[in-house]
Amino acid sequence: MGLFSKRELCPVCGGEVKGLFLTKIGDKKTLCKDCSKRISMNKKLLKTATPESIQEHLAYRKKNAEKYAALRWDIQYTDVPGLKFGVDAGAGFFYLVHDDLHDEDNPVVFSFDQLTGYELYRSSRRVDDADTPGDTALESTLSALSGIADLMKKEDEVKTDFFKLKLTVSDPYWADLEIKINFFVDSLYGSNGLPGFDRQLQSICQLFKHVIRKEPVSIF
Image (cartoon, rainbow, N blue to C red; front, side, top):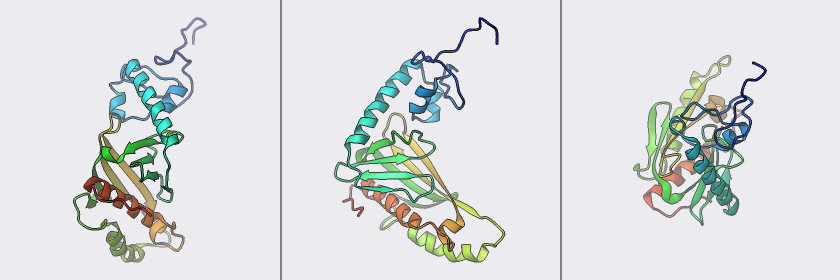
């Protein structure tokens, strides 16, 4: 680096750009660490984002933080690997924390009215959606596969699996969400299983179905 080389500045706030894992926006300019960590939007939107649109987004995120702090999260799910989920059923809101959404300190908050689509996949096979009548198919799917998993499992082999939640939300920054939930097979079926994982995931999926169908929501 030359003695008089120009130091790169953040195009949004003018702060110094330094550190690792920083965010780049559409014009290939890099944001500073502070602006980078406050962003939560679909990666596709970042490719076309401008400094002005990022400023609007950060104002939106500030309002999201105020909303998150003001709501009463009656119940929160934390046993699902990589996912934190909370519900204010009385006010009609839920929040999500997942690696793809970023910023655990300011979880993304959605209203029930924003949720318009839901599908649950196990690996590549769809096992449930909002149109499937009755309770979520997750419970029967786990029950049917648990015995098979135990028979196939080898003591010296680590087996993994995953669920994928696909949500359609009328949000300007997260119109479509794909939340992948990875887990070790032992987490569900082994003697050292993760207590509450299957129960909590069932409850989350059932909530989505009730919300989309405009049915009474019961989460307790």
